[in-house]
Length: 178
Image (cartoon, one colour):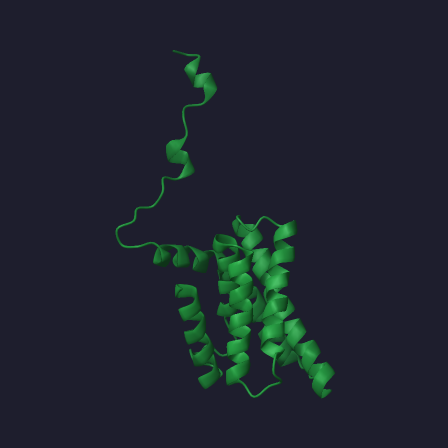
């Protein structure tokens, strides 16, 4: 529920102002991060529903062709799904690689569909650099934001589970010494 609310707020803020946080060249793709987070912790059905729902919400509030955003975020979901088949999404490295590829797919799909529908294929150096910074920055921030989402998702009375190091027994060779 929190992911849906965060996605709606992010979508509405992004639609009101193209640069709501004043970050200029760096455009964090929170919707892709949330799709990945839902995929990782709640499964592919929740992530697919969120992707299509956010895409439809963007289509409702945008003046672009109907279904374009839903298609783009469905491609993002498919990229995360296929990426998880090749990389371990449970590891930090896997999270970075999969989200990096998903954001790349989002930008490539958007550019390709725009070029196909409108005949506008603007490939300027500044747009390429801005998208490259966004792709790399979003990928690198993924593990940090997933850790923050985990902290926010736990209730105030819930404790963290013990780490794997705390529950390990002594190694078997230690038992032989006694």
